[in-house]
Amino acid sequence: MDKATIFFHGLFPDHVKPGKQDVIQTCKILFDAEFESNFHSHLLAGLDALMEKDGSLTFEVHHELPFECPGFAQAAVRYYQQVMGPQSALISPSGPKGPNTDQTVYRVQWKVSLEAHQTSK
Image 1 (spheres, rainbow, N blue to C red):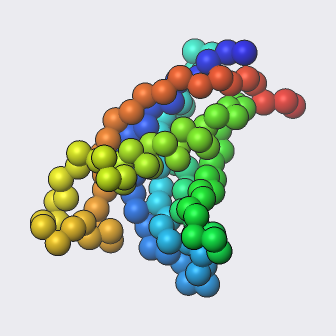
Image 2: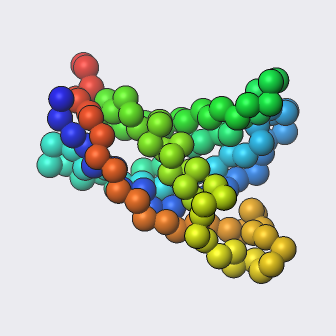
């Protein structure tokens, strides 16, 4: 199987939509992708962090790529956890009270190589 290179650039927290009580965080992830000498820039993925009834956290990743990349969703979740997690080295531009999610954009560069193949036609 061939490899695709994904270049994650930024995470944009978004408002949680009304009526989605199980969603605790929703955001957009900006990335570029390179596969078979084709470069695709300014792509967006949506990520919803969901609270399950048992209290566990799960994720839904919504994306469209011009090729098949089974590991993309897992890589997007890892990127989100790196940016937003307790190990994050980010400094909030909103001051000591924490980030203002309405105005905060996290610009964190991360590159990953994933298995990929052409989309079946």
